[in-house]
Image (cartoon, rainbow, N blue to C red):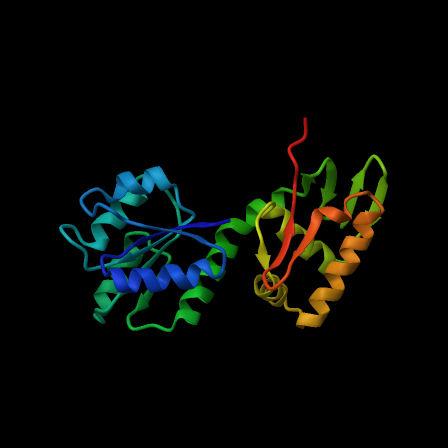
Length: 229
């Protein structure tokens, strides 16, 4: 689950951004002390930062510069100011994107998702093997193996399974699963998702693992993992 730090002193806007991003299962944090943004950044260690330009005491440019001295985390600027030099300054200080207020939340979310894929995808490409409930999951070969045998998953089944085990013991909404498959340039309907999850569970039954993929009615699915002794 990605963590977002929102450096925004407008509480109404912050709360709306937090609500929208939380719907996509992002963990969202706000700044409590605008005199010490960097200390909070270091404590939270977010995967992405969204900064307003006009802030109490020091502006967003200052905090972008300070954050860049500690981290290469992706940074998106938000601003109601429309001067081209603001965008130039933001990019020169190391920002990854600049969004002018007022903005459409779908645009903000699309930019966040694109930035996260671009920045963090290389990590996913390097990690081909995951483990869950004592089973080994090969993300390149689309196979799951444990002491009871091996099953092969389709690409859609593996994409769903991968997302579920990445958020093990947490509910993943049907909307999030469908949107993730759409991001992979596949059209997936609600019914198609149900079919794929049922097939995934049936294949995992062959390894004695099907019962750990639970349906949460009206919410989504959860990949449970019990502590192994």
